[in-house]
Length: 416
Ligand code: UD1
Image 1 (cartoon, helix red, strand yellow):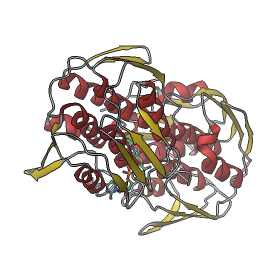
Image 2 (cartoon, rainbow, N blue to C red):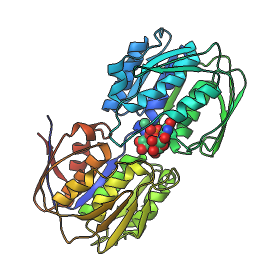
Image 3 (cartoon, rainbow, N blue to C red):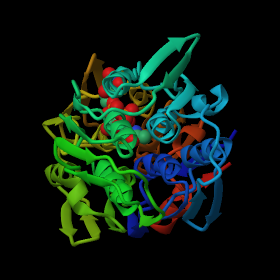
């Protein structure tokens, strides 16, 4: 299995281009099932979760072709409405296909989703919303069987602004007869991108990016072409790399407006930021200032996915930073590995107290999940000596060409 080997302590200097957002591509790929036609999607990173989605689309009967970062999906031939257990277990986000398959076929069978390394990740909000939309659901032997004669529009209040549930409702409601309204909807930029994609197909959706989304169902959806938004979590990770290792980095293909909470924290740790429409330049301070309190929250709050890379950087701050993880349980698995590298972190439930140390030392560590693995890269870049990270497949789920990008800004990193 692949390992990443980093010789730490090299200052980072230069420009890095951020690829398209994984979490925007996945629901858009699910949306391609809806139109029985052609979908051209630019800016799709070649990542494991994207490949898993392509496998699901092919299994459903769609043709999928990749040319560079452009995926062309033709869903005219889709005929299957069952997703096999193996495909479903490859990634949790496969549950997002339910809404689209139901809208097109009125029937969907899947196993319960996999990819649950962040603690329990229930889909009760998705299923409750589907039931409100007149969909009958049977859960047995680890399978979910859904069917309906037609999807009934509904007023759906989400008890928590779940990203996946919001997306699933949008997909299911886009072909319903009538108007569905979601209140307490998730406001993430990836939801806005899904709305833009669906509207490009001819859907009538309004309000994404706010907590109320209105979906006026249409009879059919047509072909569409779209470029996905840049990955704000990848951008946040590179900012943490630059903060930890020091130096000046320039990120291109970013939307700073999607990253306000992350940029606010960067200012608090003492970075100088030069921000334009699609670029961010970060000049790291000699030593980072601690950040009093970082609470992960639904957007526009600080994103849970950026928590661990930031924590890795703040292990080196001049003082104590406090994290409160409000979105997922079990999202501190990187802490033990960071401590092996010399970090001083104490965890109590949702709270992590990070006391800054003068230096980290390279060690053999193991990526426990996607963003926790990225945190080890951040730490390895700043540490003295060599860090070897195993179970890199976790990191590969979210970062395309990570080593090449980091080498391009002066890191000494290779894959073995
Ligand atoms: C998405 C992102 C993930 C990110 C997360 C929060 C994708 C592919 N993944 O995941 O990277 O970390 O948003 O920003 O876009 N919950 C329930 N019941 C449900 C659904 C969710 O209790 O039916 C809980 C979850 O357990 C979790 C919280 O709500 O504690 C947030 O989950 P959700 O917003 O749904 O995240 P995902 O869509 O899974």
